[in-house]
Length: 257
Image (cartoon, rainbow, N blue to C red):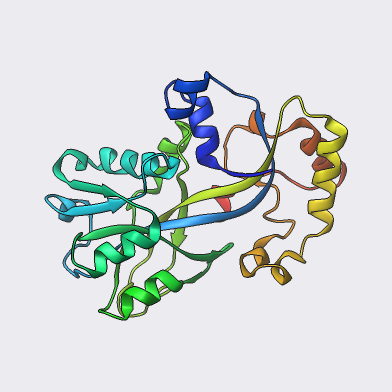
């Protein structure tokens, strides 16, 4: 089944809304990459360009209960500005409305991304631009994103080359964080079934783009690109298939820099 990195975040961390209620679970294992949400900070204010400019601002992240909200909070805490902000939490679309209405200064927002380096603004940014030019703020430090990932946050560093989103309002390279969505199975699932699922996914490489635009990245370079540096989180049956086919399991972060 497809899932995002934040699912494992809640299972592997000692505390979290799921583990607090249901107890610890550490049986999920990666099979294949699927897609991602590549998230940047978005604003109408040109003078907001980095972490220091966030201080005293109204910032919208994601709704309560969404694992990605915890990932964004972790970034703001690492920046040392979390306690100096007024934070609201809503789904992406409501965040867009808040920014357009002047209720917040900055929102977190995913942009369209086809691996490895094709970026577009997406419909939400297009809506924002109906009011005023949109400016983009990166996460600044890919090393910080990697460190947070080792703590099971969904923060794969994603380099967005200059001008990818807009030649006027994104003149420099910036770092987004990728919130991976992937196929996984429980470690105790029948290995023959997992092997067969892996085979079907790999043999359909190159076809996914005809089903959905973001499927164009589903090639044999990116299907086995795990969002984790720990190979123990890859299902053994998937590893077996990849080895037999001579397909290398790689860290997706290495493919996006």
